[in-house]
Image (cartoon, rainbow, N blue to C red; front, side, top):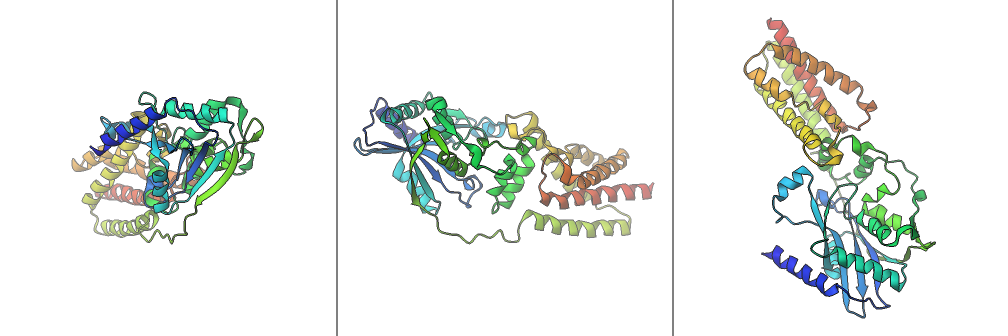
Amino acid sequence: MKTHIFLILLLTVSTVLWGQMLSPEAEISVITCGPGQTELYSAFGHSAFRVHDPVNQFDYAFNYGVFDFDQPNFYLNFARGHNNYRLAVQDYKRFEYFYIYYNRYVHEQVLNLTPAQKQKLFDYLVWNSQPENQYYRYDYFYDNCATKLPEIVLKVFGDSVQFDGSYITTKYSIRQLTDLYLKYQPWGDLGIDICLGLPMDKKATPYEYMFLPDYVESGFDHATIGGEPLVKEKRIVFESAPEQLNNGIFQPLYLFSFLALLVLVLSAYDIRRKKVSRWFDLVLFTIIGLIGLLLFLLWTATDHKAAASNMNLLWALPTHLIVVAGLIREKKWTITYFKGTAILSGLLLITWSWLPQILHFSLVPIMIIVIMRAYTNFYLSNTRS
C-alpha cells in the first residue's frame, strides 16, 4: 500500500512539473553522496540531479537509483539480469537528509548553464520521469544511477559538452575500481569476484570510471560546455565524520585458511587410517559444484554481461555434482576424476597470478582444500586396489 501511495505522489509531481517554465533564479546541480559501509549496495555512493527554483518554490532530486520490489517477478528478473530501475522525482531535502542521517557526505556542483540550457535539461528530466519513460535496464557498470548523469548531459547538449579524462593517471580495471570501495566489505568483495568474470578485468577508460559517483563528481569538475567550465560553483553540503571501521577476524581469508588447516588434519587422519571421510567430500564437492552451476548459469542463462567468461569455473567445476553421485554409488571412474581434479587444481594454483582474470586471493585456501581431498581420495582408492 505504501508503495502505491508513493507512486501516486511521484506521478503527481511529474505531472505538475510538465510544461513548467523555470525562473531565471533556478539552479540545476549534480549531487554526489558518499559511500556507506552498512550495506553492500551503499558502498559505492550515489548520484542525482537537483533542480531548485526558489521563485516557483520547488526543490526536487531526480534520482535514477530507484527500483520497485512490487514489480512482477522481481526476484526472477533480478537473477536473470532484467533489472528495471527508474527515475524518481523526490523532495530534495528529504533526499539530502537521508544521507546526512547516515553520515554520508553530500557534495553539490551547480552547473554553469544559461537559462535556455537549464530549461532544456529540465524538460528532458521531466519527460524522462513520465511513467512511460522512467524505466531503464540497469547495468552495474555501464548503465546505473551514476552513469546516467554524464550520459544525459551529453544527450541533451551534444558535442558542446566535453569530459576531459586526462586528470586520470591510473590504469585500473573495472574490478580494481570496484575493489577500492569494498575494503570494509570483504564478503561482498568475495561474492562479486566469484560471480563476475573476465569483462570485469577490462581496463576502464576515463569515461568508464564514471560508473562510480566519486568519479562522476571528478568528471564534472573537469568538464566544459561551450569551452567554459561545466561546474559554476561547488558546495560542500555535508562532510561525513570519520568512522572507526574494522573487518574483525571473520574474513574470508582467515576463515578459509583455518578450514584448510582442519582439512589438512582430516586428510592426514584419513591416510593414516586408510579410510576416506566420505561425508566431508560429499558436502565439499556438492557446495563447490553448486557454486560452479550458478556461475555457469549466470554466464549462459542471464543478461549479466559482467558474469561472462568466468575463470572461477576452473576451480568451481559443475561436474563435481556428478562425482558426488559417483561417490555415493562407489563408481571406479571417480578415481580418475579425482586425479584429474588434483592436477587441474594444482596447475591453477601455480598459474594463479598470471591469469587474465584476477581471482580472489582468499580462494587460495579453498584450492588447497580441493587438492588435499582430491589427492586423498585418489591415493586411498589406489591403495585399496
